[in-house]
Structures are given as C-alpha cells and as structure tokens.
Length: 320
Image (cartoon, one colour):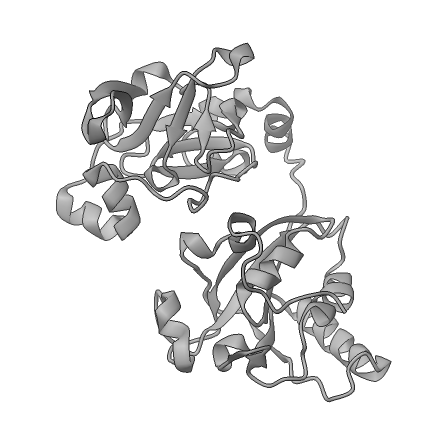
C-alpha cells in the first residue's frame, strides 16, 4: 500500500478540529481526554492523515500519563524523530514519515524490561484498526502479530457480537455502569433518534436536534443475554417513569429509550418492559419508548468514558 497526505482542502474535510490541531499545528490533546489512552483492544494504530501503520497494541502499555504510550513503533522507519526546542525544553518529537503528521514525543522513561522508551502519542493523530478488520482494510500482513486473534480471524471463529443502543439520561452515568457489566465488550457514548446530521453536544440542548444522549453497547450474547441487559440493568440504572427527564436533566435528549436493531430485539424489549411494569419495581407507568435504531453519531472524545477520566464527576445514575 502507498501512504500519502491528502491535499489540504480534502484534509480539512476529513479531520476534526482536534485532529487538525494536533497533526497539522503540532498541538497536544489534554491528558485522559483522547479516544485511545485507555483502549485495550488488540489491533494496530495508523496515521489518521495518511493511513500508514505506526504502532501495535502488542507494544502499548499503561504509562499513567493519560496518553497512549508505546515501547516502540510498528515499523521503525515510519516514525521520524526530530529535535524539539519549543516551550524552553529539549525534547524529541515524533512524526509520521509519509503523512508528516505530528504524533507526540519520545521519552526514555518507559518500561526498563522492554527497552526503556516511551512513545507518548496523541489519540487525535491515530486511527485504530481492530484485528478483525485488518485484512479487509489492507493491513493483513500484521495479523501474525496477534496469534490468538489472528487464528480466530483466519478460521472464521470470531466472537459473536450483538449491539444494543440505550438511552436513559446523561450518557456519562449510563456508560459508566454499562461498561462494567460482565459480557460487555465495549461501549460508546453518542447521539441517535433525531433529525440533525452530524450533531454535536450543543445541538442536543433544548431538544433542538431531536437526538437522545445514548450509549451503544457491544456485548457477547453467550455471556450476556439482551433480555438480561434490559431487565437486570437498563431498567434499574435509571428512572424509566419520568418523561424526558432524568434527575435534574430535562429535555427530550434525556428521554428513556430502547433503540432496537432487529425485530427480535423489539419483541424482547416489549416483553421486558411489560414484565418490569408488572413487577412493582416502579410505582408509576414506564414511559420508555421502544423504537427502531437510526443512524448513530459518536459523541465528542471528551464524553467517552467521562467518569473514568473525571472520577467523582456528575452522574444521576445508580442501580436500584
């Protein structure tokens, strides 16, 4: 594959403002705010600008700094080191070879048993490609790095994954509970159920966009049934009897909703809702809407795993 930097006009359309600031203006994202600092999924990280392969999850470690950290590049020649004397400091900047993107900096405080180096990288300069998509996206040569995962891909023994899309007030508190449930693979905060294309957080205020603050949950149905996800968790982590409200948060963006992805999920959701209503757990009628899932829009990076990045931050969610 060839890796080239797109023309400026195309690049401005392709990148978010944060990605542009980091890669083109040598910016630095705030610690614990990037998309990948806490990502533990196996796969590789490529330049968000050019697509050239840069780092592997096999070389990633938790440095405690709040930025993705790697002990070495995936291919040494694709990460260029440059002297950086900005801000009155002497540092080593690292950039991508073909994309010439600013990635981050290189330090010598990494794990001693793995070479002692730490490539401190901005999430905004990267795009993550999970093992399951390496072949399809043209990076199949790197499957050999992931012995167990590669075997699953090559023999089609992939894990069965189901997706649930749930809304029940501020997605910070919802996601914090959902991501800890046994059987959940990963979660993502976002917007859905509205009419506005590519909505941002401010667009949801005062119910302007029609979208609900939601969480998309990927889970292993062999370990967690959709029925149990709804009955044992969803209907207990928020108050499903308050219309367009959760705690002090009001507006349709805070409505209670189950966005089903297929007819079987619809049947299960309706049955669970009826059963919970009869159980007496809630004294008032349940107003949770059950509607077909529409286009999903991921929320801004700082909303993802918000309570992990901000312990003690605002939430009105707890298990009843």
